[in-house]
Length: 459
Image (cartoon, rainbow, N blue to C red; front, side, top):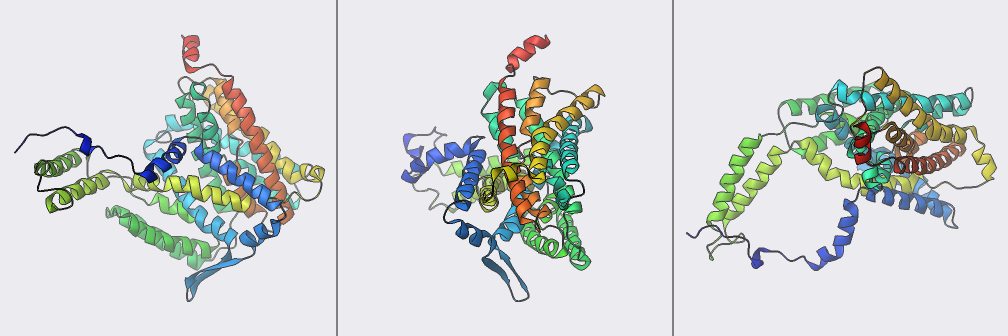
């Protein structure tokens, strides 16, 4: 049998016409700012649609026309907007839950020393905006919106940082990512505790039973994502019927997903090498190719199965679902929720206590709360500044924390479900504050010295 040969021209697969056409879109999707750009486009589209001559169609499509899913007694009839906010966004929260679990297990939240600074910043960034909003709306029916300016939109914030190149060191991106994840965890707790309707304990117990089953599957080392998916649907239904907001099911379900691999690196290498050696045995024989050789196909599938077994289900699901949430779920959510009809005078909207509370909470409360809490943590010796990051970098990241778009809109829908006019005021405040925070954060980080200059100053 001939020895191994290198790849020839025949082995090099030329891109198909469709692949050549799709390559610009693939390059765009690979950029850090891509998700934010798509989100902005959908937000603008929603605003234009809601304020055009076709504004009735916008309202009817998302908030009037009902869609029924299910069968027999197990069916739900909701508007498309409700399905997007309650079901589709559960997928987004599932990915958030996976990210939180990964960070707690092996990431920047895996030890007290690593987690101290971003957690302190997240706490300050939640308390500051909530206090400002509450101070402006105390004793009013709008006080329930105190949770709106608390959360950070990680997609927007990191998208802006990616535009700055060396001005935004990797350690700053890690800090902002960890802060946003801790911030999301806090927002989820707030939603579960303060924005929950009357509880139906029978459904809550059923949800707990499903969760226990999913934990049991994990302990029994079940690694099939589809089994967790089926149990996840049941979990979502029971949580929805319990009165707790249905998206919490996404986070709870994510916490049960296995984070350990079925096989270790050494066993993976041994199994893959064995399969590749069997595949290579037939490579130089002109009478065999993958289409006609069962042995080669078996070898390929063996490598495929080994690759799945060495990757934890948590990482596989996060990698598979994350693009869908960035380029489909969140943009659709924005399209359905960002369309505010700007009726009435601008002065009345801008002067609304709801609008002012949201704008000042996000634009002032967020950066001041994050920066102050981070400074206190460092001074007390609890946390430490990341390498190559100055206090100006931290303040710039804190300003970007004021971009609360996705989660802020989500909480606004819960807080002002019975106050549609105030919901519109809150949305205007979210959009305005997110724009101002993005511009300020971009300017502050852009004014920071490059990483090499910081290192020279430290020396």
